[in-house]
Length: 185
Image 1: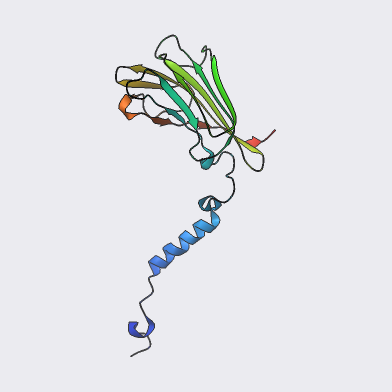
Image 2 (image 1 turned 90 degrees about the vertical axis):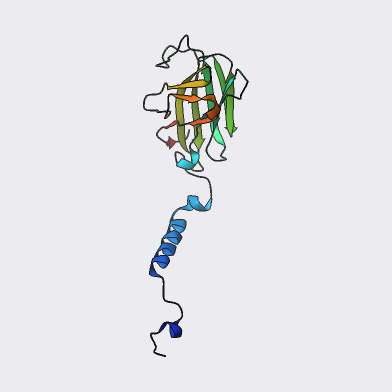
């Protein structure tokens, strides 16, 4: 057998496979969030909060939930409710936010309304281990007519992705805007 033959040196080296393995190892080592070590930094995707709108079949209430996308405790969660005079609602200006639910050091907060239309205003504050604070905010309005829920963002630059959904497609997760992070109090 010659020294360079496959029988004498084992299987030929798979360079593309070796390259993929090296890249994966580098990503794992350079991205601590993939290992789940420690608390994420404020404003990072792991601290993102969302608004979930729901309506169980056969009910007349529209509950809204404000949780995070991961199991994280928020420094403060605020969810306010207002009842607009008519639909469509185009702005949060002039709405009277009369029903606030506020939680500190919490995973989520919720409010339900049997009135239609209804608007919700939400803020999630996340404080990381270094004291940096990240905020996620938004305001939405909802109207239920027959088998359809209509959605409208009341926050400039915040797009719900759709203006209406069949009630059978609920619950629906709606994005919130991430505001600038800064030092804690």
